[in-house]
Length: 408
Image 1 (cartoon, rainbow, N blue to C red):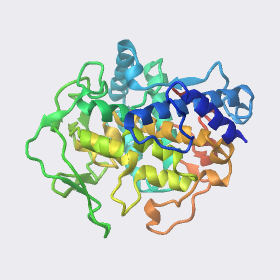
Image 2: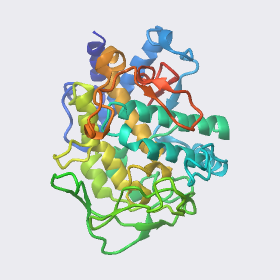
Image 3: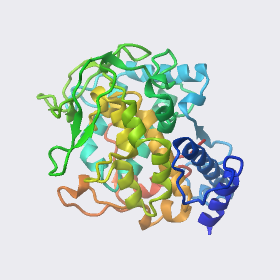
């Protein structure tokens, strides 16, 4: 079986790292060891994906003829050179300078091409979280953002990712993503002292999840995006003390304000450390368990690695799941979400990238209101991003359908 051969590759890759290789389904409890085990899994997944492309088992299904010669590789932000980071940053700024495509009548707050992506996410939030399309929708969304950077702004690289396990070890403010340098995605917000805890889930009848405040909270003060404008929302912004912020004029109305962050390493360390990431790959055996662990199972007090990344950024829009793509670091976060799914999929490629078992869940947030089950034939629509509507079955492999990329 392919899954067995991949496990052999994983164990072989892990030999130089571990004195005695751990079984493939054993999660290292030490976060540093877990990151090494995670990299062994990623290396094995990369080799498996290349074998699939080379043997045409996937390329035969690919609409764009994915081959080893055009296969793109996404890398962690910290591994990029200074010039590569600046090229990415400049492309993001370019997108922010271009006119949007969304009609003003549909979203008055869209003021540039970057905002087009924010509006789509706001508009579809309740159908793309805790639903059967969560993973595939965000894969397509992040890829379309990458393509916009490349085709509309001349970016030559690929979409980088943020390995939360690294920043859990270093602290967010020492991370090359958030250190506030000119090669970062900007740093923390201005410090607001004595902020109360953040309470989430206060309206669902379950005990609220209590999260600590961070070391910032105000407008971002350093780095390339310190002067950017967040133009829409808030919609459901978790505020310190338990309140929720929203714009009375509506979620898509124009409401310009600064980008705020409240970097919270404790949240990163609690929910998105190396062990948590590895557990999300090795413990779930079906996609329903995988995506629920990733998003946080209601009632467990755990917000998952998905929530861990969002809430560790904090601020506005970081604590607002509707408007979160207004923070340019969102796309590094969701590229890592996609990488975790990609590794998990390559552990059992056929079952997890093809057929009915590759998706699970319904079409509405936690099935509220009740809705039909998601199927691989359900269509993903990206509104005014200028992209074709595609069935989920075309979005399940990173080397098939419109895609041709892997991760390191």
